[in-house]
Amino acid sequence: MKAVFGRCGIALVATVAMAAYAAKPEPPLLQATIAALDTSVFDAFNHCADPVQLQAHAAHFADDVEFYHDTGGVTWTRDAMIANTAKYACGHYTRELVAGSLQVSPVKDFGAIEHGVHRFCQVGTDRCEGEADFTIVWRLRDGQWTITRVLSYGHRPSPATP
Picture 1: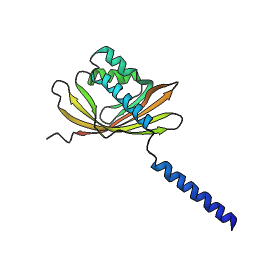
Picture 2: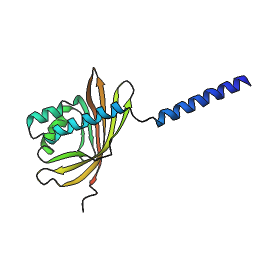
Picture 3: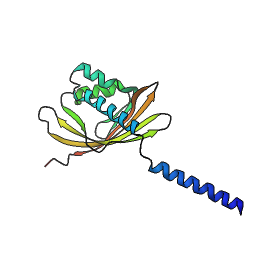
Picture 4: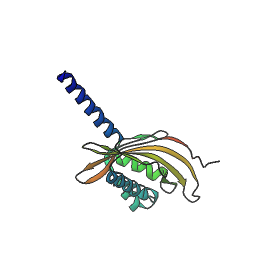
């Protein structure tokens, strides 16, 4: 009887611990850190027609970043991704985070996963006609956060578009 109770007790403790972990929200400091990084990388992106800002944007990415875009394809390096950004985005459109969409999850011994929805606005008209889901994998190494993977997918008209 004692052995059965011991196993049940362990199972109960494990179940409670797993439920507590699943219900635990991301650490507030991590959420704030990734939100600030998102703001930094995309503020530079939004001004990337300026070569200094394009380089500031590029500095957020690992050399071997993988960028998956459902309509644009895949790039396997920072240089290729930045060349595409310069050619297709800079001076053409800006990106804004859809309020309330940012989610952050820690990745043990690596960094974090950021997920949300972003909207794209045409430069000059400020018309925001498109949006997409995104996922960004951030690595923390030696106190420095860098982006290692990006997925931008589900591109669609913004709900505000008539």
